[in-house]
Length: 144
Image (cartoon, rainbow, N blue to C red; front, side, top):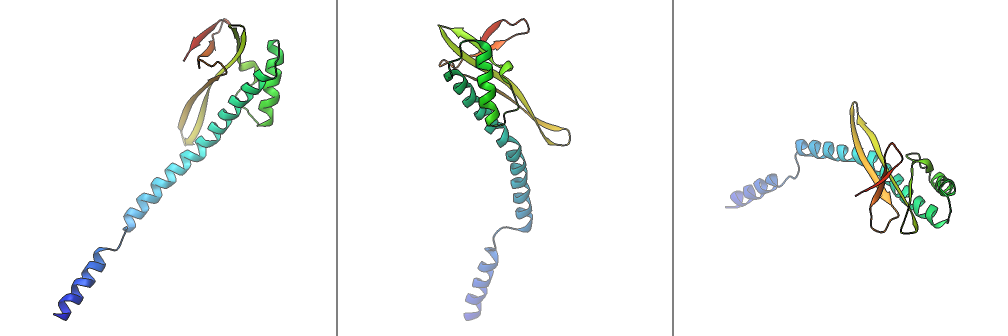
């Protein structure tokens, strides 16, 4: 009787060992892939948030013409080392008497070898959230 109870305890202990070496390797590989993507994507989103803050600050600086607003954006963006866009890339519109700033850009992030991730960023100071596009002829149109 004693041997049978002792044998059952040993067998139960062996059945509850935890993760296998294969499971551990797969888990670590998945964590590595997630870490690589995060290390590439997080800086792009930090820069995007810096650009959004810079257009709000440029609008608040109260420039009356396009050059003043672009210069204000470049000053604020330079503080955060923004390299994705410059003041000349902003779309500045005067709808309903208020100056609104918009931007849109594409960020290509290399992941490994010839594999890249492309992210389209856009933002505006317009409360409606409509981002004004500027086509090749300089005409403005609205898009969401």
